[in-house]
Length: 151
Ligand SMILES: [Zn+2]
Ligand SMILES: [Zn+2]
Image (tube, rainbow, N blue to C red):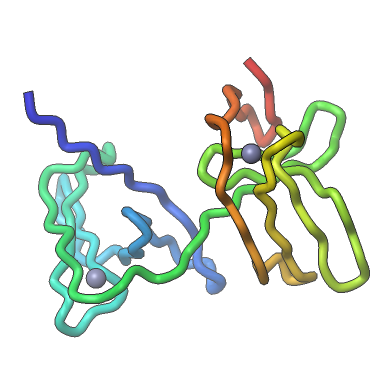
């Protein structure tokens, strides 16, 4: 059986516009038909990469051959632990705030120990530096109403 394994994530750009993220490439919502909508590569121009989603977000078709490098784009999600402590999630890995200075804060992998994955954000919550290589699989958890629950 041939499985089309394409992960579509939805993110907001700084202007609050909804974008779709597939394999590091961003897409904007273009045409809306009755049951489907078309998303096109935000690069535009020569790049003809696009895909079609149904209204219940199933991928019906897509071409993902981009004529350019992917934009450096990291999906960063902020949640809270039950204790109220903030956590950051990138790619299913969780990070806690390890060091906070007046201009930046350093977030480290919650696994600690040998894992050196970390990133630095400035006061605008923009990532200024990152090293996101882990030596372990991501933890198992669910997010309910913005609260992180370990399973
Ligand atoms: Zn493209
Ligand atoms: Zn790690």
